[in-house]
Image 1 (cartoon, rainbow, N blue to C red):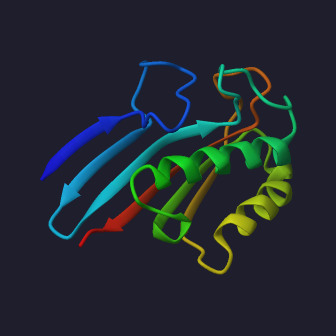
Image 2: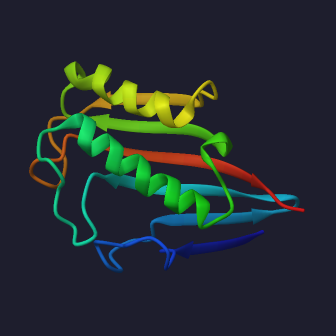
Image 3: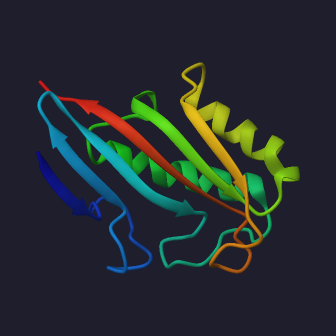
Length: 135
């Protein structure tokens, strides 16, 4: 096993080196990717469309797609999605965006309502686990 913690150079890391956006565990035949919780922020770390679940969902899935691609993965490789939302009343808007990215390939999922997130105006945070085969 080999563990790599990184921020791919192909994806903006708006929070600098405060944490790794991807933990990659290389295993025989592939790798397990654990993506840190992504929030809807621009490349400078400012929340996009504060309070707007659809716009933030779009940005989050753009970031997740880029992080996966940097490691040779796609949304089809995602095993589990964990979502933290400040209002489950926004679930339909989030689900519309999420379903467009995953299509019929629906990974296991956990969604939790939280009182707030660490950035004012952020309404959801999404983390994923993916498996990538090599060779």
